[in-house]
Length: 99
Image (tube, rainbow, N blue to C red):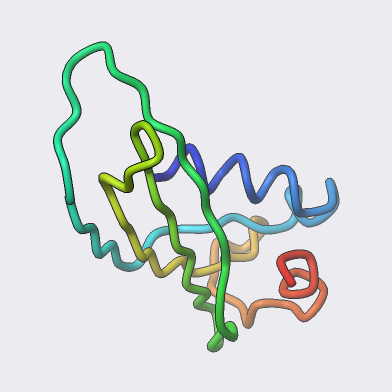
């Protein structure tokens, strides 16, 4: 989940945003809907839906094997100013990168 979210952030955000902000997980909710055996692969997809609330933004992810969803996840992330390590309100410019 973290690797998928990090790749999405790096791809969607500007280099200046990546340098200025860091995200931390506040909450995970994961539903396991199927099994995965050693050596099998999953395909993951992630998206942001809804509005940012203060420093928090919800991100969703699904992992599928052969087109069948085996894991669903909702994660609440909080954005921090990298220089101060303090939470900040999610900047509008960051929200727009995920619209």
